[in-house]
Image (cartoon, rainbow, N blue to C red; front, side, top):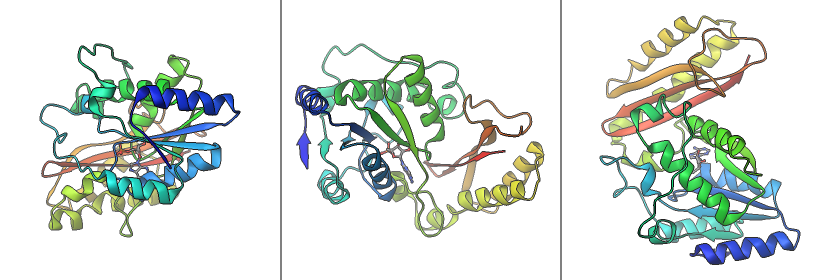
Length: 283
Ligand code: AMP
């Protein structure tokens, strides 16, 4: 596995691979790799000759009071896991390399970024779309792989890719979970023992909604009420939002139409740790 730290070397390497007829996939991450990230590498490998995994804890997407400083970092272990997963190139730039002094350019997607995560974390998506655009220009991929775990982020990136005509296929990997159903996340390590036990409430709520939908229960208000009642079983949890949205626009669904894609989304806080989970489904 080749390890690249600079923009210039990454661009030159991607250019030369493309000139040699190789197809490239990029998997952007913030490191602290887990099986969820590695499933995206596997998907990338099935779709391209060369897989580039980027590891960069992007300061732009963290708010002032968020966990940028304490975000878990373990590049040696990431290197080991990436190598084992068959990553061809690990792109691991420094902060200065991506945002040198006097850096002043940003990429924004309107509307879709105003609700839910965008509402709770102002400027978060501006940070995401800026760094992802930069990574697209630096790694020059044919394919980029993101997780359904961050459903709104995925929708924002798809929208940006379409709107700005990036000639890149966006692929989505399904959510990888712990044995007890908790969606894997680098932030799960922040959970106290008691919160970790209660954190399965997100998956349990998703399962409940899924089974109601499968039983033909399609009243949105009633589904959301059922979900909220279930979340009350976890006394340590504070609900940020629970909603059923249109998969493309992220606008709350008014009714469930045959053949249309929706996402049941939830964000729940345990202390200062926010957990996101969701269920993608098509009627
Ligand atoms: P992060 O390092 O948290 O920024 O995540 C990097 C990529 O991995 C994003 O596209 C996430 O959506 C994806 N991801 C994170 N957790 C999971 C998971 N449990 N299953 C699948 N993909 C995930």
